Structures are given as structure tokens and as C-alpha cells.
Image (cartoon, rainbow, N blue to C red):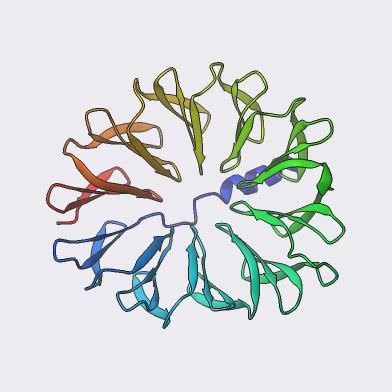
Length: 361
């Protein structure tokens, strides 16, 4: 059973998403969009705000109307927006107290009077104040999780990209994963817990051991509490009690570094860390040494890592390979999905996508 769930989880990661969008202002201040190798004008005036996902972009235009770019087309969703969040697959937004979602071309109202909410790539957990319910939106459906009418406080919950951990009215923690509920433990025994894609990790007191939920099973990782841990897509990276950097990927625990990293960071499929002034990245079971110095800045998303090296060159690590994108001074750059946008010179704009560089001039 665990093997089957593992295969389903692996097949569900990153294959259904476009991961090919970028956005920038050209030399006339027109807003241009890059979509899988093609450029087009999105707006002729600068945007008030925007957020980029894998298959859509949510933005406020120059008049503060809320719009969505989806499936090569931009359209107005509402005259205004109170707040919004764009994840890889969902756009969640508020109109005063109303909570709505844009999901694969459809806009749906989740709650007329919403309280706290958390958004992952594949789900939304939210408190419906009108109905006193903690709900989750998943695969187009609103699923009630817990009735909190008797409680005076709003429910406690966290989300990963496709996982949700919440405390019910009786004080127990539960995991929502792929439409199923799993009981975790009594909340007072959970010293710390975090959620990622396909995985939840937690420390159970009073023994303070470190455990993970993966593929419907609970696995003990360490007898002692880690000094820190961070969640990724199907893995948890952590510093154990001996200062070793380790990674559990659902099948095995690997020691990534016996030297304590000065810093480590996790985003989606990537684990980046600094050891003895070496800049390294771990991706899909292999560790790559990228530089013998720590870059002045780096950004990453999905399986793309872009950074500025000590010469000021922009480099990219993309699924096991490294290359230099620009030898010129970079004004700004960013990563979204499988794209790297960068601006240099007097407003020259290029996009790296799927191994090629596209000029936006």
C-alpha cells in the first residue's frame, strides 16, 4: 500500500503544471508577459501588484481592478480585491469578508464571511465564520473538517502544498491528505509540526523523538529532537542532535553533510546549504557543489536555482546542470516555475526557460 501511494505521489508532482510564466515592464513601461516561449503585451500601464503561479498570474491593474491571466488570456475577475494569494495551482482572494478561489478557469465562492485561511498549491484550509466550520477546499470541492461552534477561539491549522494539519475541538491533531483523514496525536504532545508536499514532520513530547507521516504511514526518524527542520516536496531536511544535515525522502534517511551548515534553505525540490564557504545544492538524491564562495544572493523555485556569483555573473542550476546566463551586471532577477527572468543594462530583459534564453527586447 505504501509503495502504491508513493508512486501516486511521485506522479502527482510537477507534471500537470505549466511552470513557464514570467512578467516584466519593457522600456515603454508596458507590461509584457512571457508564456512558454512567446511574448505578448499584458497591460499598457504598470501594475499595482502581481503574483505569479505555475498556470496563472493574479494581478491588480493600474486602476486596481483584479485580473487573472490564464490559458493565454487576461480577464477581469472583480473591480477590486482586498487581498490575494497565488500558489502554483490556485488563486485565492478576498472581497471584504468573502473568500473566493480561481481554480483552472473557474471562480468559486468559498465563504461569505471567512476567518483565518491558509493556502497550499493544491488546497485551501479556511474557517467559515458564518457556519462555524473549518473546511478544506480540495479538487474542486469544499469538505467540512470540524465543527467549532462550541469553541470560543478560531481553529488552529497549518498547510503544506497538498497536506493540512489541524486541531479539532477536542484538542487532537489530524492530517488531511489526498482526501483522507489521519489522526496524528493529542495537540499538547506535539512540540513542533510542519507540513510539506506529501509529508508531515513532527516532534512528540515528552520523549522528544522526531517522526514523519509519509504515504499514509508514520515513521520514526530520530530518537532525539532535531535542532531545526524544513519541509520540501516529498522530503524533510533537518539538523540532527549531532549537527549533521540529514534528509528523509520517504524511503530512506541520508546524511547530506557531516559538517554543520552555516545556513540551509528548502524550496520545492531543492535543498541549498552552505558548508565551509562552499555553496551546495541537493536535488533528487545527489549533492552538487556550485561555488567555493557564498553568493551575494540566490532565488529558487521548483527545481530551478538562480544566483549572483562573486564576479556579479548570473548563473542557474537547472535539474542537474549549471550554466552562466549573463556576464553583465544584473539589475534584478527572479525565478518562477521553470523560468528565470533577469533585467540588465538599460532595461534589457531576458527569460531563461527550458534550457534556452529568450530576449524580451
